[in-house]
Length: 267
Image (cartoon, rainbow, N blue to C red):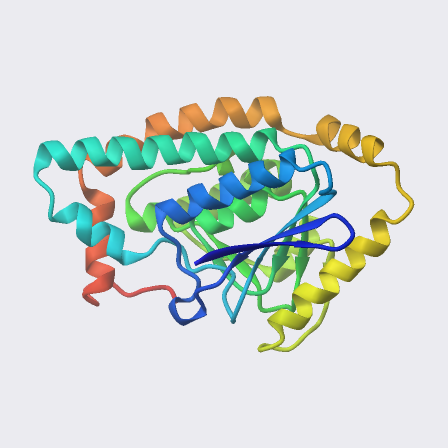
């Protein structure tokens, strides 16, 4: 469930609220998040956008239900659906993140997996709730390649060598490494179970930080710092590389193995 709210002071929150499922997301959820970013970007009252979550996970990645539905389709319909869902979603969502004009703040309350981890890297400022946060890009474990611009954002923020290790071997990017890479702007040192308080504290910090600032200057600075051109190029390359994996069925097979406990889940 993706929820949104306009707060006082020009703040717009987008909340992943499915804690009972570790905030796993459907492909439609990713599209909805992108649409809400566009909505906030077009609203002259909004100054900053928050991407936040609930419970103990930021997001555990994609929901299994989608893959069950795909598996029940015939070969031709399955291919059409995958081309539409995988390719179109990736290009559209990555393009929205690449084009956004207003500061996009991530309230990282816990682990972020897969496409959700890619979204974290697309945010402009990332705050951590505690040292238990981490990112995981399990592309090689699940049988496909990088998505949602992370082939650009991860090397630029973590370095090419560390990114290669984490992506090729599907290993976690732990809190300490994110701090060393300056990916985490601040740790709020709140214990598990305090996600709502964490989100509220981040909102307060941003309200205080933007008070008295020139809004147009903030927008122009954001545009100068954006990776728009690199992300636009990357989204096409990533889609072209990862789509054949989906069409050949390897990710669907591995997601099914996870669902039926034939393959051990990293979580």
